[in-house]
Structure formats: C-alpha cells, structure tokens
Length: 396
Image (cartoon, rainbow, N blue to C red; front, side, top):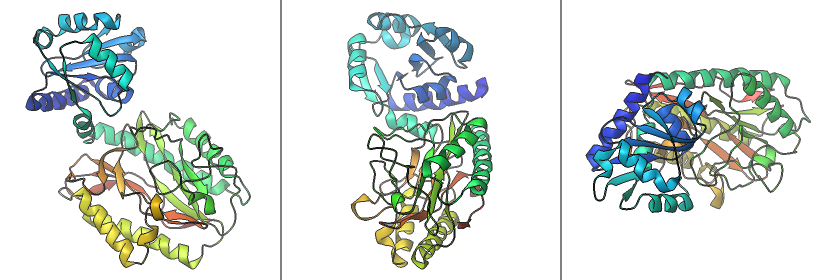
C-alpha cells in the first residue's frame, strides 16, 4: 500500500469523528494498527479528528519506524506519562477539560482499558467499534487486488490437494498438505477473527459425520478437532468412500483473507446429500442475482431462508437444531468476520468495495455437511467473484 492509501483511510475516519463530535481515536488492536499504519507493534496509534496521527511504540520501535506509512513514530514511555506525550503532540485535543476519545470496546481487554482510564484522567471515552468496522468494510482497489491473489493461491492449492487425496487418508494429514502448499505461496498461517474467543486455523476440513458435530465456533460445521483443547475442524478421522468432504480452507495473503468452500466425495453421495448440495448451489445462484449495490443484507439472508424452507431443508440450513447459525455470509478482509453480515437486523445496503463470503450449507447429523462458499467484491454494477476454484460437487 502506498502513502495515499493510508491517507485515504485516515481521512475517512477523521470525517466520521468530526461528524460524531469525537476529538480523536486511540487505536489499540494489531489489525486496526496495521490498517492505519502498515505496521504491527506493541503500543497505540492516536488519530486526531484534525491533523496527522502518531504511533506510540514500545516494541519494536526500530521496525515500526521502518514500516509505518502514516504519521510520526514515537517511543512510548511509561503509561503514567502517556497523557504528557499526547498533550505535547495534540494540544488541540488534550488542552480540553474533557476530550472525547473513541477506542475499540469490542476487542480491548477490560484490564487494559482500566489502565488507560487511569493514565488519561478526564477523558470521555466512547465506543468506536462499529465506527472502525464500518470504515474497514469498504475496500479499495489495492485491497481487492490482494484478495484476488489470495483467491488464486487457494485455487492452486485446492487443485493439487484434490489430485493427492486418497481414501483412508486422515483429515489432519490432508489439511497439513494443504497448509504446507499455502504457506509456500505466502499464507501467513493464522486466521484472524475479531469475535471474542472465536479461534480458527487455516480452515475447516472435515468429512462424514465429523463435519456435522457441533462446536463452539460460530459456523455451520464443526468437526472433531485433534482434542477437546481445540474441538474444531480436522481431526484423526480417516476419509472414507461415499461420504461428503467439506473443504472450507482459506488463505491470508499480505494480511488479507479469502474464504472458500467446496464439497468433494470419493465415489458418490446419497440422493439426500446430493439434493441438499444442489439446493446450496441454488441458494448461491439466487443470492448472486440479488448481489448488487442497494441490496439490504437482511433481505438476502431472508430470501435464502425462504428457499431452504421451500425445498424442505430449513431444519438443516446452516447447521441443525439449536446449533444452527443465523447468517448466510459475512464480510472478509483483514479479519475473517468483518462487516457486513448477511443476517437479520443487519440493515446495511451493499456498496461498491464491500467484500463478502457467501456460504449456504446444510448439516445432517450422522451423515455430514454439504455446501459451497465463494467470496465476492461488490462493484458499481453487481459483483466480481474473487474465488476461482471450479464449482459443482467434486467427485474424486
């Protein structure tokens, strides 16, 4: 990213700050720091409603000086003197009796927040969580170009993985092969999520009845996992003939995530699972027809629910029973769970620059999970598909 991109991001935030009567934003979280500066460090970024930001760095100062692409970089001293630093650098804000400062309540630990409250007496704190997520949900052409590269990397890995899959291979063995391939293409190896306690590895690769096992993760599939310490995704189960294999494996390229799912089978699926898979494709096709600027996120979800119900599969859509999840898709970018969400109460209208993963899936306890997922960038006239792996049920 060039300096003008970071200036654009800062300008969008500052415009929203001024409109909300907020004097500045204290950025505390790694991903948000990266978004606004191009670097990740221990410390804070202060972005005033007017003027240039300053990054206050504890570790590593030398690296942050090399990497930061926005504003000045200063060493962060003791937290007890942080207000003095801020007052020196931003007198227009901190000479006020009660400056209004926003920060990320959704990800900031209470303990750290209380320390900041003590270090910055007199500040009126505001929750800036939604503000920051709304700004980040509109991607630039540069961001979308990176996401395209991630989609191409995932496609190469999928095709090589499908060619190497054999009956009797363990789920974790096959996932490890895919992870190795992705890492050599530049995948950073982690899947960052904003949701509290939502943890995810490179992907959700599960087969047969294991895929339909419920899990703590807020998604339509579960998996055995390797142990109760992380009961999610690929486990020690062997992949068998004539059972669905759910390959929900993404990639993080230069910090940006692509999300994609394909369903495969060695042999053939039962008529019930085959039909459910076809309905997942139908829902995706119906959603694509409506995927254009102005469409309301909640409406897209409601239409998908209606189609699943009309096909007699509502009880299996996006999970089963009390473990059903209540969404059709979600934003992606620097985190896997970004805005907007295709779900009830999300009244956002689609805008050019939004990037959304849409994942209609059906879960059948004791049998498995089938479905498909693609990622899309909303354009002025509709959408551009960012995932390029062949669709359809992949028979091996």
